[in-house]
Length: 480
Image 1 (cartoon, helix red, strand yellow):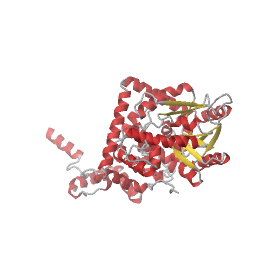
Image 2: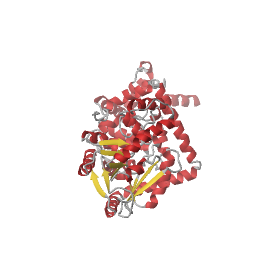
Image 3: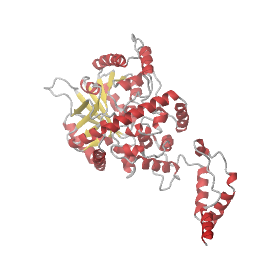
């Protein structure tokens, strides 16, 4: 049995980042992939005004949905239940896995075939099922590759983006019986499909994610490119859908603008190959479809973000991955360095609610605050502002009004507290400020060359030889 993968301690982030930075091949692969995805997205939005108008509409829909989230969730449950879908609520990952396992045991199920689902990654679904003796098999090609390699996805849209074709060829030759080494991409895809087709027929349960839940009609919307999502939701006799509570919208008409933003921002396509709308189990007069449909609605820290007016914007995310594709930090270190299910800018702002700020605060500092993530976000999440907020939370004094999240103040140290207290003392007293600035300018030669994190990638900070007030005084004397 494979060991359960847990979130890496926060202090390991720098070590993992340096490991990738010291790997020229991986850096080159990520840089090339990000440039390719950026170009594809740009080509899909040639008209600036149309793009911004669509972003405004998408942001408005998501904000409206979140503003009415409690009522929409109740409406969604009522309409899904009326359609024959069984709705379950889970406060955390353990509850969600227990619900799914309970469904599997009641059906005497031994095999689960999975469509792409980041929520299932979030709660370590595969490992929980394996521990209970139930096989959970990934059917998305990228997810299948990383499962075969016993790794985690490195991107929320393209899980195996960190793998080269040579690495995949070697993996298939080693892990799949009877497969010879080949670097032909089409051949590799066909090998994977042959394995997966057998799994669809053998599975007792199909599990999928959900892109949007439509409250008004009680409908689950799922988009994909490979057809595996449609197979997972129709071939097995039981379908379990799993999603976060924030994925609900009010009306069916709200979905097309979001789909247009999602597909163009994620993979540079005008629309994905498959758009699935699921409103219930198979009816007596229908020839295919599952006998049972279950929806598991997961909280897992989302209500913490929802309770804060500023941090609520985090839940607008439609999981397109555009912020990762344009982030200079992600492009250099990749997804695995973050050590969390959701990497990149979106991971830095959503992971603290799921895992606690004490486990994830370094991610908020792993940003240049260049603003690229906010500029490309299709639903206008102010990611840079939220990163600054989380940085402040990490440094907040415990018990103060600034400390509102679980794990607030984790990054605060005695030394840092003393430095800021001294800084505040100097800047709050004019005489002391003048005296300190005079000593700093005259004693600039004593400035240390090593200044902690600042000088790891920057030149040391050295005070100017003359203060601004000294320069102004000299200018005034010259004028006279």
